Image (cartoon, rainbow, N blue to C red; front, side, top):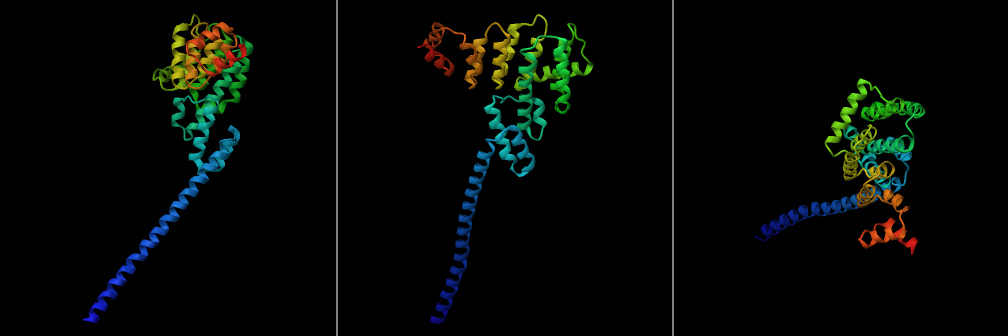
Length: 284
């Protein structure tokens, strides 16, 4: 009987030992996996921290070389867009593989176009000539995004003639711009629509204000700067709307022209955006 008990005990002990070893191994593997996950997380955070300081050119180079870090470069483009107030999207970019990058590129080029050729240049043949030259330099981008190319060409024709005759392709792409804008969720397309309306003779300013307000609702806060430079009414309202989105650029331009009484009036109404407080401090 003792032999039977011994054999039974040995058998049971053997079973216990056999079951215990995998459990220990699983625990160690789990610990190693947790450490590896933590290390990878720290590594990703470190890489992202580094690339978040890169310029757009360096970030593009990094993205092209390090294709295994697309998730990080995606976040880096988002960070760059936020820093430069380019968070608005374009419908044409939705179909692109690197959507965040192209939203940044198209938004950046659009803002440069407006600052250089739209807001501060008189309508003339000379401006049209400069635009044609600029259009050639951007031929690759225009080929990828024909609606943006049509907008530039629309502006070229508008500068070259008092009664422009648009090509069939430009008319087609203009129709697409307006169609995209109707959807109301693409800030870039809404901006194009707003500027097309601004180029019309006898433009309806109230309608344009409505369009620009829609732009700001879709993160296209650059619309507030367009309003400050080109409109005569409701500019402060649009500047406040942009300030709610964290963009104080239009408000900073406006308050520079305010006197102490006007600034105090805004402050007493509970409007305490940073540019107003800064201006108030200067007057005290």
